[in-house]
Amino acid sequence: MIKDLNTQALTDKRKEGLVTAIYIGAIFILIAVIYFINTGIWDSIVNFFSSLTLAQVPGAASISLPAPANPAAYTELYIAAFQFSLGIGLLEIIVLALRVLLHSPVARKAETVGNIVFWLGASYLITTYLVNMTIESEWFVFWAGIIMIFGLSLVARAFVLLAKR
Image 1: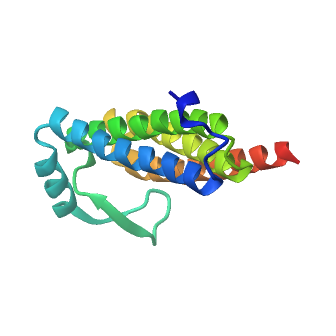
Image 2: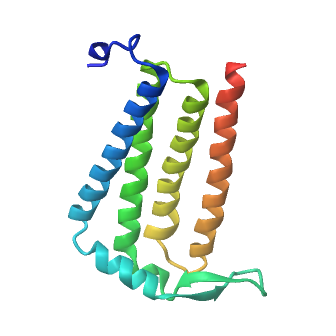
């Protein structure tokens, strides 16, 4: 199928537009599939946001951040978030393959590698700290992990850019 696109005839702008269109379309499909798989997801989202309160961060006496009143009560929502994160991570792998086949700029490939690290890392953290939540302090450990994964994704992106030099 890719050979039929005649990549030589496509400008770089059109190549990137094609990849973006495929990516956005796939995200909408992923959201629809997750919504249909998890039938009560909308109610879970509403209940989750209505239950947010300020909770004291463990080990930081003067810091309070938003947290659900009972974080362990939203397993269905966390499972949907896991499915979304894993789906986006897998989609990013497909996008990276497309970018390699279409000879996208290195900066775009680096961005995609960083996205892969972030989304697959987030899916791991969701299952580790939210789906299997046993104590409320894990809510804050999850968010600390997300910040760490974001940093790792930036490092992965930088390594791809450095490898090109």
